[in-house]
Amino acid sequence: MFEVAKPRRFHYEPRFYDPEKEKWEALKKKYAIEKEREEALKEAVKADSDTEGSESDLAYFEQRLRSIDREKRRQSSRLTWKDLFRKREMPTFNYQPRFSGTAPASTAGDSGSATDGSSQPDDTTLTEKYRQPIHKIKIRRRFDISDTNYMKPISGGKIILYCFIVFLLLSLIIGL
Image (tube, rainbow, N blue to C red; front, side, top):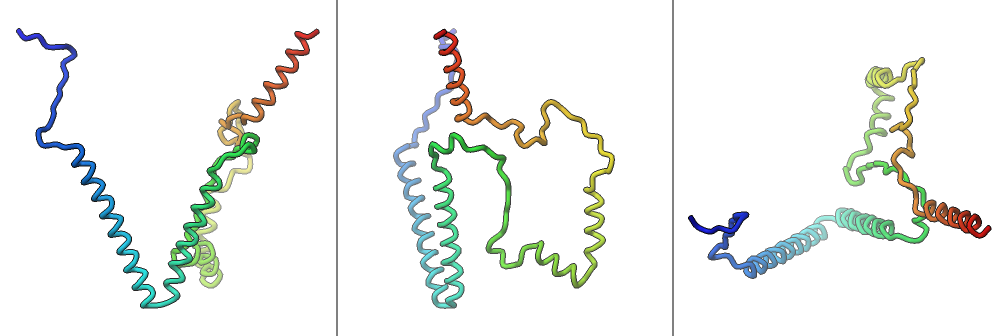
């Protein structure tokens, strides 16, 4: 009956929508949040300076540690020519809480077990649970996931070196 272009599309333009106004409102909101954050930080610093010096020292050292970590991350993210020849390793996760206010669980557990002695049966059951059998049958597979070099890419330096060796060999063969 009516000629309609195919594929049929639905196109809706709202009447009262202004993209420029949306951008300005988002910008205002962003700066309002930043201003609130700065005011809250100033009030917190003022309250800290009024109460005790040790709390302000703690806040200073927390902020200093954050800046040092940020600088370390920035340094490690830079790439140099030495990174081409660096051996890649699987990432490891070593989490140690810094500002929890309590001692780490391992040191607290050790001191408690020395005096109490009640955690000893738990430790033995835990070790029994994860102890490997004496006559373990190990099946060797072609691709072993437990291997640390499994699925590691070959470094760029090795690739360049191998290509150079192949180039030298080919030039010697063709030159003769």
